[in-house]
Length: 283
Image (cartoon, rainbow, N blue to C red; front, top):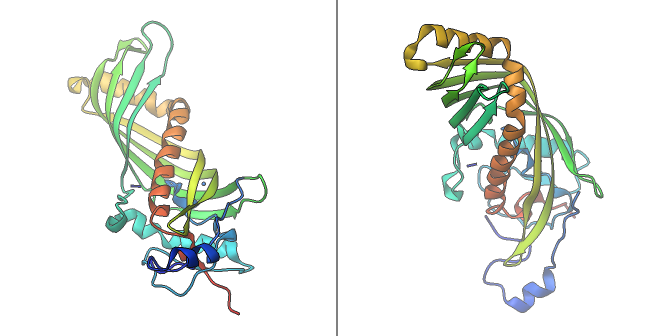
């Protein structure tokens, strides 16, 4: 929470000189998980050339015109993982370990006394431990796309329920814990280029994350005033219907994850100009 000298000159170059040497770059419009952070360097194919400059440690440059640019960008994104885990204080980017979501509300059974669950203050761990297995840069009107593997996400949240579960009144509060395993995130999005003070910066305009999750484990603790029967009944329901509960969560989860990682990406891109992302081609 989610510098160096420009090819257009440093901040003390006169306006007339900068005007002659710089022009506005428009990226073709067509993504850490967490995941989503995988969008941070995907627009580097059409960026201005950079002069030699000191780079912040979290930036790994890719050579301009490199025929293996996709592999280089993938490596640059993997290079970013420990910085995402710890956060980058100098650009006010918080750690994604954990990243927090405010609330998810679910209706798990129908009827006037349907079983409803609200999860609040969700802390999600594991988003920085990602591996990009496939990456396609944007071409023409097509968005860029990344397939990202995440071994495991752990979720801790405050749990509130109401209604009837099976035949038991199941209103109460407690703690919710979930482990999601073998995750494949498909990330798509569009990026544009914006200019500030004669330098170009990328901006993530749209971001969509789709999750395919193989294993699901959910459990509640310290609920219903520690009523053993209600707690066991709830955990039996979650154990036998974990994928259905996850399916009910997915629309909100996808939307919130997309917004969280879009914000994290743009927080970084606001401070890293595009001429810091490409190493100029040798003459």
